[in-house]
Length: 375
Length: 244
Image 1 (cartoon, rainbow over the protein chains, first blue to last red):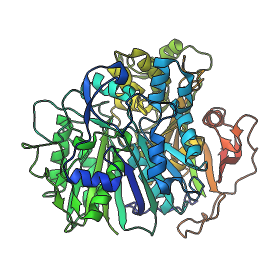
Image 2: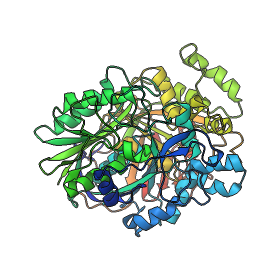
Image 3: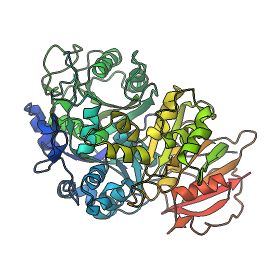
Image 4: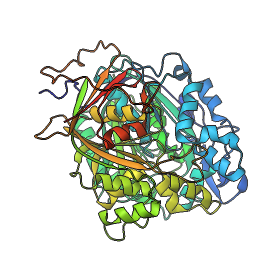
């Protein structure tokens, strides 16, 4: 008895036909240019928005307050800047949508709890938020939703790739969005990793800290169309501790080893997770240095903040844009000394490189990585 | 057509049981002292997955439309002094991570689904496209309190864990077939040969589907009562569930 005849290639390779992102520094082109200039989007904002609290580094879209509105104002930015996402035909069985986020509309639930105003409810509950987005963006019902904290976007990319490789879809739209609210800022502040200090990814200093940022992004994946290829997608989940990684770095190695094997012989640069926490930054640097010796490592959350479940897709869009522009932004916000000689603090020309490894990490010791290369 | 065999199945329907009674019933399934910070959903899903074999390099797919409803409610209520513990446990997919972390059970792939009208079928699709020979599909919901009326958390609790395999093994419990009802032009997607014929089965029962979409609670009921199914389960997808 033959159980299954759908064939999936080992490296999960697909083409990147289109991409885009929106951050407080603009679209993918604008954000990449701003990062190349060393600009920082993070600003000190009261952690509980209008209710005050300690100032913490947050990067909010222009004119957007930390407190959510009903309906959320960020939808306008998505509609105006993501034309390929709102075109007709997405969300049908052959053109499925993969929505990823770690926040969804939870800022509206916070606003409902604090204000009692039921106007927030249609956007707050997770299923209702996705349904609202689906209708606003004109999608059909073939919408898959993943939420796995800060590796969420990678799951959408991988499953879209598998659908394409299995011949079950012609194109896949991966869409990710995370917009800040006192709900998430208050949570990270309570965990004491969001504090008054601005993040300095991979910098060896006394205290670690992160920043948080608004972000949304999309990627259209196909089998044959596009100037870039995504391949060697890999995941690993340590399940060692809710917030800490295994101290021996085994989770990083387990995730990166298959990517390194697939990338053998290529000259690469590395886009790390780089939130600004110390222990994870050290483990990340060590693992990258072992797996990809000599490859320059950058992280962009010192400027943009951590866009949470969307960071994998936001930073994919920026990596692709950097490869198209021929120059990779450095690790904005950090100065020497850093954890590893491979950390690139300044921007560099990337024309001589064959591609980039893009990696993300999440609560629960979750790791995700893929290789982005010219087609 | 995608096909998997059900090798093992665990379900839990607490019904009208109070959360305290459910916790008391399940606490012996976990290491002593480890349940103090676990949520109800974490205990339900953790217990359902607990005695399935270790997964290692397999894929775990987790489905929960609402996730940690009670932790979410309590975390929201903790402001302005936000609780770090409730923040952590309110984050999806805490419901499946609690048990796996407690057992130090690493896994290569974890795909946590959330929300979405097609949650049940999309989770099945994720499990069936996993590259390994075996995948565990687990899921559940947790009945909330003050956010139930707002439709922001689940109004009932349940949990399940299914071990799915490409090969039937000596004693499969059942068989799942997902068929795309939309044409395909890709040569890599083809009908299996030597396939076991699928006998005619009852269509969806009243209340199990809405507009041809199998809801998450309806999917749980099929598993819990080992009820056969043959019908549309999502736009473009037909599901057949045949019990041995």
